Image (cartoon, rainbow, N blue to C red; front, side, top):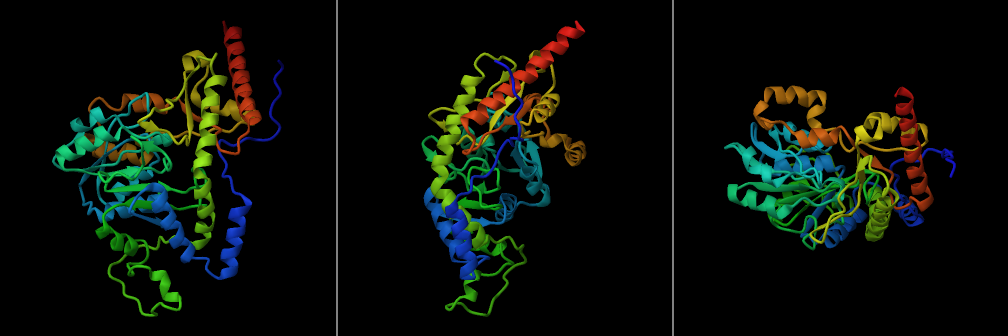
Length: 404
């Protein structure tokens, strides 16, 4: 069968926004409530119910949500937090911005998530908490992580930016009280989007008023109501804080995205599993783990790791070759400790890296790429992705034969 290059560029992801979201945005504009208002409050209530948590407060980004969570936990200068390097840098940067030190633990190469067997070796008298990252929407082995945290008196904040709708041991991510807080993201490439945005899920009522203050200038609970008929024009700032509130315009999208989320995730799962069938006769890649009955994936990303010795080209060359065939892909992620700032940071905080380094993180970081995956992707799109991959591999094979 002859190969035909795709005519238009196919991105690795794209938000799926329907007429329901658009109509709700228009309704918000016409109502006069475009910033934080009743729809934002309603969206938070729906998030609580969906994620099976007592509280879920939305704000402008997951990065801000994690920063606020660390502020609420009283992270101090020099405090150490165990986490992974195979994540977006904000997981580390929010710790650094509070004066803390992110101590890096290597991954399990099967899952790409933090290896809990390596946690205790990284604990020092300055360790205060653990931030596991549910990379690609695959839950971390939380039972082992919680046990380590309990033995050493550490808090756990779950980075679930990619994992809304996933389940661990039958429960929604964020619903177990053994994690003090869980952070979700609503960025355009996530399974549920609000354009931008994020949220903190938690169970302790004592945290509610503080988080509400910290996301809006230090003003008291439900500050948005001061503009309504029952509100007071007088406000009181209880502590200095950022402006990170979540808008009704964002909630207008989120209210309908949340209704569709389980369907979105199911479709992602169909496409995820279909990739396995399409790759069945190719050994140039290490394919991702699908999860199991305990670790129930929400299929945010399909990450394949290119094996250069078999593919005949590096991951970066492979990504570029796919672009030339009008196929987009992503790199999730370039390990955080490779970035310029963190190279310098870990030279100054050498104890925050294992003595033997992060071999599994480094190996995967050099090879991984995310293939197109979103609910609106068609089987024809997916077939074109794999046909392009076969074509790129064929060209690489031909070049090797010429050299020989």
